[in-house]
Length: 110
Image (tube, rainbow, N blue to C red; front, side):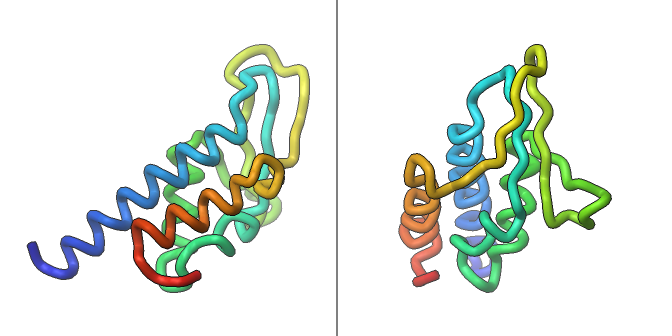
């Protein structure tokens, strides 16, 4: 496998892992969620962080807010809307889990 293909495969694994962690932080179907893009990207490798954050948020069901030019992302509830929550990745140590996943999968310090 060529180096570029291997890097792309690792990046895709990282996207899936980050999307799963973000999804786990936002599991209540009656809650609408918002997250700041940079609050996620900061825990990812510099070279690919923005791209991985963008793809992971999309896979986790988030959409960029047009009014903030993508600085804030939102996910609508899948059930009846009752609550709204601003995602804080430090609650539940999701920030640490994302950083560890990036280190184990990508292999470089953040």
